[in-house]
Length: 109
Image (tube, rainbow, N blue to C red; front, side, top):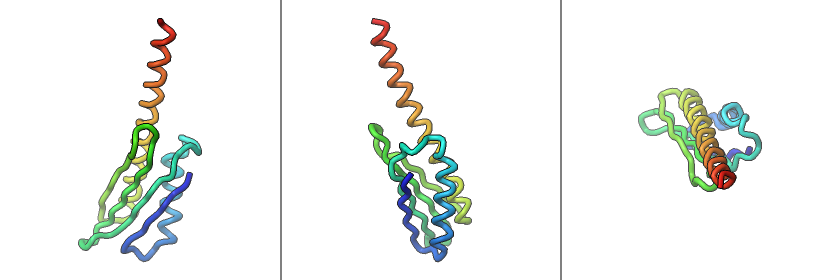
């Protein structure tokens, strides 16, 4: 899985890179290597809150993404990766079910 990480207004870039990649492997590991590049943006706003945005493209559904905000940077990353893993998995499951549904109708006819 390829991760494109963008870190804005945060000084601990290398620590975050390893942490984000580890959390994404945990959240998306069961999906295999078929995951397209995942874009992650981590930043802090003027109020000191951490923002984590994760997105990826799923063919044929388009862009899938989540955004989390928290006072703690690592909590925002944890929640965003967890949500993204569940969302990505649900989207792929819907695609599999739709494909299976079309095949079963053809076989019945």
